[in-house]
Length: 322
Image (cartoon, rainbow, N blue to C red; front, side, top):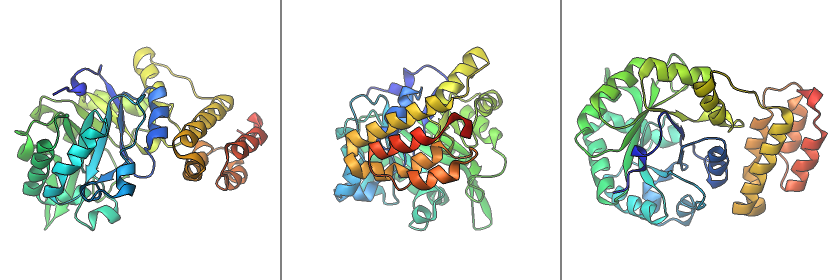
């Protein structure tokens, strides 16, 4: 088994999986700006099992994408063997299993972080996934979830499955109950790192190079998973690498941001044509989010459907607007 996880220099910077966001175009862009590992969008194991075209399309990638991990979600262990096999056939470098997603549309069907309430099932899902692939298998988990007046933690899950040949663990160090707010549980990452001899990546609340260094310093983890913080800011990977190496980094200027927007638009068009540019609209809004006067241009950008329209709008935005 070729285990790419063992060959990547530490600390590893990974683009964490996000449904509707981490498609091939965005992955390529993040790789250009320093991401070492790329996760696919969350992909339904059931959808792959039944060979749904819409789900199979999520496996599409570009040969330029290195260290690509297909992330599977679901609740039926028996579906994961075939799903993992199809993931391998797509040309990916690894398979990941989602035990951490807090989205209601996932948890109400028994997937994501709700699986941590049934550690036996977690074990079965990993076991069945391993049967379907020769690729390295990793998992993404959360720090904890409450169940029947009891807190089930990431440590509980890892103790249950640590004998299985996993290749890496990404931990979103916040609970299911407070999925994107509140303090990050650095201690949980440290405890899990002590339990295993594989790469452990910290995730959650990393929205700046300073926060990235804090996570690494306080946990000793082998790398980081970046998710919501890179929406509209894929260059954060490079800023983190610069900060860790030189203790300084540069903010992107508006001319640089315009260049990234057009790079993203071209990559999307190349893979999905005009339909992809409609999907790009949310990214366009993120690129200018938080800047003075951005609301006026955001309204125009979220109605675009052609690259030329995007060019015209961003050309109107003057540096003084920011």
